[in-house]
Image 1 (cartoon, rainbow, N blue to C red):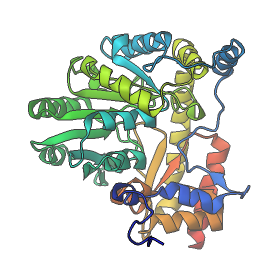
Image 2: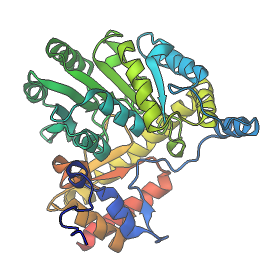
Image 3: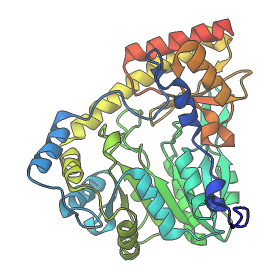
Length: 401
């Protein structure tokens, strides 16, 4: 009999070294408990609007159960190009590829551009999927952390632009940037984008922009977060990935897209074929309707989240919470408050205690990289009553601590 020690049965080293989701670890601790208020996932508490669901039903009733083009239905690519053109510079449908979820788009971009040993610079804290995807392909990820500044009237997350530029040295393959940011809500400023684009253009560095939260911004009349698509040329080394999940309340549909230079499209089509072949046709039909008729949904969602953000921020910034050690920056975008509690340095253990002792489900900051340790993430895409109940539970927990 051949010894298993000679031929170990295990995944390759890059997979073994991946960090398992600490958010899921907390969720598993509360699984099956009906008394837990779940704010741990980045997901709204509303179902997808009727008119979008009806489009999928109609497509299924019409027999739309077959393969589609690798790059997506022409109708959806055209709708997305028109949508992007309204928000940013003019987009050609030929620059749009439809994917089976936003995270699939991120993996496809990594497969398209990254080689083992490539240097990738990421602005952190960051959604764990974004941090781990380059590592699956053998790339090396260098983190540049946002800073929690507390020297003004309100604490805030800030980018040290000079530190980021110093990390983007010759030979760097890509800059990975998510703005508005998950988990902090930090949103890059236009002048920072312009400096970064010029620097990356000079050194031939790809900019991989995760724009999934671009519509969830709360400045008056903002409409959309600053995007590299506003200022780059169509053939530059800039890729934007996006998703239907957040703006149109479609998290479970697993539908996304990407906007890329035309020179990448042939290779991208091959990769989609070998990963998923195509996104489901009936899901894409729902996507067409969401893009063409869903602007009211986006506007209503932003208004709802703004109210939720302000209410939760006010509670976490109250005198009682501050006395308990809570330090809560107010996010400019996305759907999260990422805050610290004085004296708490193990966010995973803290979140498990919150589940067990308070029935409160939050995400540990350590899930978003070492730079997030000591903080916890609260998704505020929920009703005011749920948020108020959650805040009460946190306050009672802290009072008894």
